[in-house]
Length: 310
Image (cartoon, rainbow, N blue to C red; front, side, top):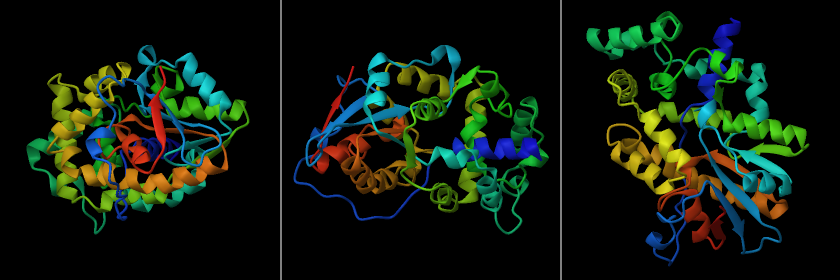
């Protein structure tokens, strides 16, 4: 049971995202002038102007990265220190509350008794089964888990959290959370865990299963999208990351509204409220920052000055 709960915690934390239907923010400024440019290569951004008395900061994270690829600049540490509170996609305190995680087990599972075997042909099911067996995770543990949870890990290492425990894999969110605790900063979230999980009910199980299969195939043939994403991340190339999402027409790109657009829009009023109260350090997935529907463009759209810090 302990191992199952540990895996569940990882699945919940490293899932891609959710969606929220809200009214789009409108502006007279052309969107093309608001998105980060190829010259603005940075993961760290300063938010100022409008009615803010003090600047807040926005940082693009990658949820899991090899220790050798992990980096954090002095400027990032300085801006974190200056901020009075830290906001993640979800409140990180709740990720350590197993009573919360246990209550969500039902939402992890597919409805009506549907299993992965029902969604895949024999060849594809064997591919998935073999892939997880190599990771030391028997398929019977995940037979009825929504495939999108599994896709979050299929292209990378899913060894039950052991690599994170021994320090070989690093999470930016976990690092920032520890820094916040050490510096006694308040922590908050832009959305709830329950809200994030609703994304899986908006995508047909069949599509989720095919995304899982394709992510495993890409990994097995050596075309690991995770490696490409890490390279773009280390280059701090938001434009490149945005293009990668858009080019994935059968995966994330097909559900861009679900994964990114609606969610980004929903965050803006929450961020405004937090920033008006006190200087805030926002740490969200880097994929949410770039493009005309990214958080940077949306903040600029409503009147904030958002500039890269190097």
